[in-house]
Length: 179
Ligand code: FES
Ligand code: FES
Image (cartoon, rainbow, N blue to C red; front, side, top):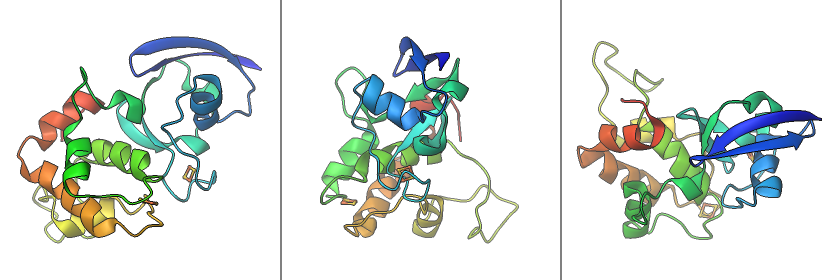
């Protein structure tokens, strides 16, 4: 067992946790935040993606005791003051889900992705900040699987937010980092 103090969606929590417990299980089983989903529990599907200190991470592979002092944002923390995060609104507008099981992870991953800078493996011009084209979005979101195959609309929804020109501001608001 070990003590961990972690801030989740702005609320601090001090807990005594099994040293083998994942952050995912801490969120779901100890804090009741079941928006974060368990898919594979092996770091392969992205359903459990959250933001840790503004960076996206699969919470099934993050040990809870290692998060002492961390600032965690889950899907429950994306909406501010009762207003949907622009990504959430875009997912609804674009019908970017079917069963919805992957959606919390897709949203958190996209929020983190919008705050990331630098080229990806599909970037052609390595000397310029790459625009978030569909190819870039697909590559950068490739760690988030959707068994329903809603990828076309997921990419469109993220593209809408990026194209709105406020992507950096939106990402900064959630992750604390600017793209
Ligand atoms: S449940 Fe964590 S990556 Fe699948
Ligand atoms: S919407 Fe069903 S798994 Fe993605």
